[in-house]
Image (tube, rainbow over all chains, first blue to last red; front, side):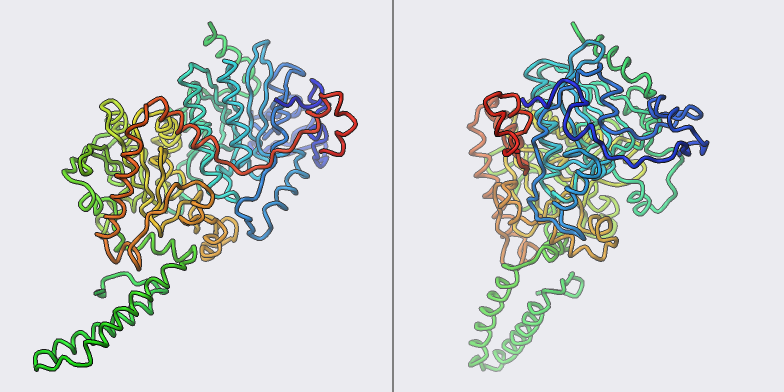
Length: 282
Length: 347
């Protein structure tokens, strides 16, 4: 397994230079419209101190929030998307990928690796909704499958944080759809072998991602007010031609209907995961 | 002969024209025969029949992606319940999902296939408006997938192979479907089908619409009838997202490369099951007969495989799917001191 750079995320190529346009000192909350001091939001795990609105975080920020400092070891970052369909909508797919790589500093929409959470070793995966809407193509499918297999072999707990508005990625066609099957198959074996899988749903988790690994956790938790569902709200509205109910397809909606175990505030996520793993450990 | 209630696809116009001409000639032939004149016209009819067969072959051998979608959705195309009559015997339908209700978009039950006893699962779209409405046009709700899972568990328990027919535009996108966990049940289906200890043979008989198709589509063999498609997203859905309008569906269909031939080339489908000349809608019996030989051959092959091997091979079947580039990582090279000098050039 490839170990990238040193032990620290800061020395890990690419990700230390996440290209983010510096925005102003102040920002407006999408939840309550309050004007917030950006630094204060950043220090609060990117949660609005006024209304608890959870702003999106990047995969790298999430790793820093969840895992013990400098324990994350990135795997398989040498996997690059191919273009099996030679897909060209208004822009050739390889160009789109390249632009996304440059914009986000990520190779692909998923990072997988291992790390420690409160001293417990885990296999960790995350999809970043920033990269082609966090959609799953062959690379995301392959990385997550290898992570599941590593967790199976090494008998380690598995934590995957999902953030994908795009579901299965259209640009790789049937290959993307089949990644749902591939990961679910690997998770089936992991479950059979007695592995513990904690799935963390974040805003947004839709389509093929929701309909595969994200829904297959032994424990499933979600951040507040995340959009989680199979069909997109717009598609549903067009099909049934009625106004969707308030709060439809949110974490709270899923909790109400019995499809997740808990809603967890971002600041509690790390200790909650550690606690859950502790219960499942011998 | 076509009647006016039948759906006519635009690219089939030359076929219908020729059929009309042939019909007129045959009528004339019958009239002439009544008065004892059977000369030239009989020869003309025979020639026209040969030309018609050639025309069907020609048109159907080069359908483009969008035409394939149209054929796969053809209203006279045989559906699951037609094949249940034509391919199987003694179908014994089992309805219950033990939770919500009976989803008519997925039909499940026990059946005989020649000398073999099987569990059957399949999408049903419906033939007329009433049926189509009841079946939600083949778009299943969570209860449909739950019903299918229960029947598959039964099959595994009693050693029956599973046959699954896929024919759906996609899983139902609706409020109640989301309330009952559409994403969760499809995910559970994928995982459970991957582990089930009995042979599973899947066939796309019409539309293979994304997660809704895959939800009953994990198996040891995947066949596709010749004029079908299997896609990550409907061409209309893809067009409205990427081309900003569903009227661009033909463009999206071409870009998505999802016909049986594409999927055979990609190694996703194992086999293309030939359709009668001019499509399955022209001859249900011949389509059924081809389908039956495919099923029998594959089930006989799978029956001899020990269950542990079967599940391991199924794992490998899905494990190897993916198109990506695996370069030698720079950091990996840096970890090896002897390669330090070359690392830069090898990235």
